[in-house]
Every structure is written in structure tokens, then in C-alpha cells.
Amino acid sequence: VALELGIDPQKIKKGLKEYKPLEHRLSLLKIKNTFIIDDTYNNNPAAAKEAIKLFSELGDKKNMAIVLGICWSWEICQKNTIKKLEKY
Image 1: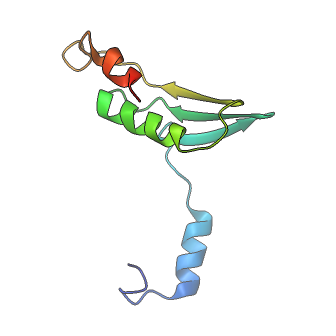
Image 2 (image 1 turned 180 degrees about the vertical axis):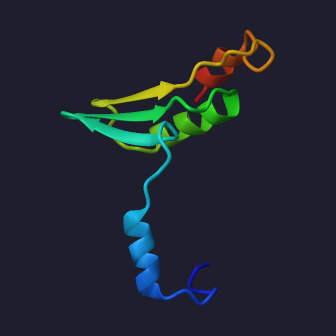
């Protein structure tokens, strides 16, 4: 898209190198030999589903963990939300 908008390729490359993702939004962390997906910012079933989907696409999960946000609203996190997410 940036190329189509006429942005210089070197500026695109520099911008991508300097990009820092927002904290706690699908952040991939590595601690020793373990990878952790930190998605604690999000706290709704749709976001949790996407985080689980990403996790499932990442190959060997032996040394991986996913940390989801807490859902504070009962209206959003109904009783059966966990059952729905278990499918993913």
C-alpha cells in the first residue's frame, strides 16, 4: 500500500525497523526457551479467539504459553464463553 501511495521504499524499510507494537496486544515474548503470547490487553471472547487462533498456527507448542486478559463484565463473558473458546 505504501508503495502504491508513492512512499520511498527506504522510508518504508526504516519505518518497519523502528515499529514497536503496543504492549500486551499479541506481544510475543521469549523467556529462556519459552515463547509467551501476551494478549492481556484484550478482554473479550472475539479477541481471545483470535489470540488462540494465532497460537494454534505457531507450530510446536511444547515451550509456548498464551496469556489472555481478564473479562470483568459478566455481560461480555457469559457462562458459556469458556466452553466456546475450548473449541479453538
